[in-house]
Image (cartoon, rainbow, N blue to C red; front, side):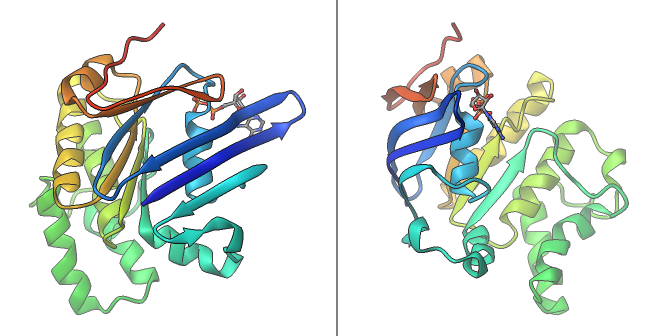
Length: 227
Ligand code: ADP
């Protein structure tokens, strides 16, 4: 599903954010990426979404070789990858329903299908009945689940969650993690970055640790101890 082969990313001449990183993620895996601030985690995710280009190395996601990717193919790539951020990035003047349906509207999905699809994802993220609320009328955990609904509404193969629990208290953080697990059970590959030690250690999933631009460990059912 995701293949990185000796990928290096150099932003400037001070040193590389990532250095010859190789990583293979199978379809339907749930992978947690951990490491200290500045280690290169966000850079790795930005390379996958094509926000950044590697300085060298090979990236293949869902059969798409990024070397051959044309700018006009990027919307197609983005459809395969849903992204959720720490700060939710919801549209404050739109309702929950509109925040989720927006991605379908701009893709030209017919209204009838939108009305059918949005309630299904609202159900998956546990927010049925809150469609008419505005984002500010929700708790942080609920807002993050709206962001997840929006990220999965076009049924991406991969969901990238970059510190999705960073702004949440423990209970809401767990609500979000449970939703990510459910989406993973339904068949979506999940990449999660987090600093939350308790979450990492309880999930017992594959843990990839990045430090100073290198993968320093990669363990099934791994754990995390910030140093
Ligand atoms: P993390 O997500 O693990 O905190 P990042 O990927 O954001 O780490 O950063 C890795 C390194 O790359 C850091 O040294 C950071 O300062 C540098 N970096 C990240 N983004 C940029 C950028 N746009 N321009 C220059 N340097 C950057």
